[in-house]
Image (cartoon, rainbow, N blue to C red; front, top):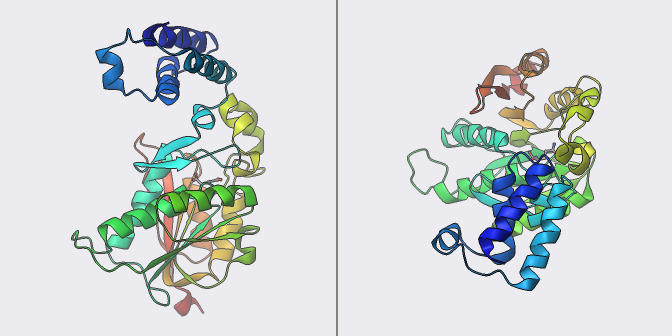
Length: 302
Ligand code: GLN
C-alpha cells in the first residue's frame, strides 16, 4: 500500500461520510500517523506505508467518518500560530477568536491599559484550553509592551478562570507548553477570582439553547455543552460577566468579549447600561461582528 493509495481511500471514505474537508482531513491524519511532510509526500507519493501505520491510519479515518473532530484525534489545534493541546473537555479554539486576541494586543501595545499593582493584569474568564490568555501573554512576552517593537520589560500577569477542573488541567498543560506563567482558578465565573485587572477577556458560551441542535455533529456532540450553551437567549453569561466584572476592573480597565455574529447590539447595550464607555464592535475576517469591548471608569461613577 502506497502513501497515496492510503490517502485516496481515506479521502473517499470521509467524503462518503459527508465530511466537508475530506481531502484535507485525510491528509492531516496521514501526516499525523506517518510524520511525513507535505513536500516529502509530493516528492514520493509512491512510498510504502508500514502495516502498523496503515492500521492506525484506518482506525483514525473510521473515527473521523463518525464525525469525531480531527482535533480530538490529533489532540492539537493551532491558534495564533501556536499549537494548543485539546481534548473533549475544552472548546476547540476557533480562528474567529483570533480577532479577540488581536484586539487585546492592540490596546495593550498602544499603552492605553491601566497597570494594576506591579504591571498589567489580565483575566481570561471562561478560559477553556487557555488559548486566549496564553497567546496574549506569549506575544506580549515576545514583542514587548511598546508598539514600537522595542523589547520593553513586560510585567504582565495572567489569570484564567473556568468552572471546569478538567478544562483547567488542559489550560495548565498549554501554559507550560508555551513557557507561560499564569494562574488558573476554578469557579462559577468570578466566584473564586480575587483582585483587580487591567483587562478582562472572555469568550463565554453564547449559543442559544434552542440552536444547539442545529450545530454540526462535530460541535454539538464533541465540544463540551457547557462551553457552548448561553441559555435561552444566548446572553446569560454576558449579563453576568458585564455586571460582575465591574468589581474586578481597575479604573479605566477594559472588558473585551467575543460575541455571536448577531449579538453585537445587545451586548453593547448591556455594557452601556452597566456604565461602560467607549463601547466598540469589531468584525472578524468574514466581515461578521465578532468582538465588543469597552472601558470602565469606576472612580467617577462612584
Ligand atoms: N476561551 C476558550 C476559547 O475561546 C473557551 C471558550 C468557551 O469555553 N466558551 O476557545
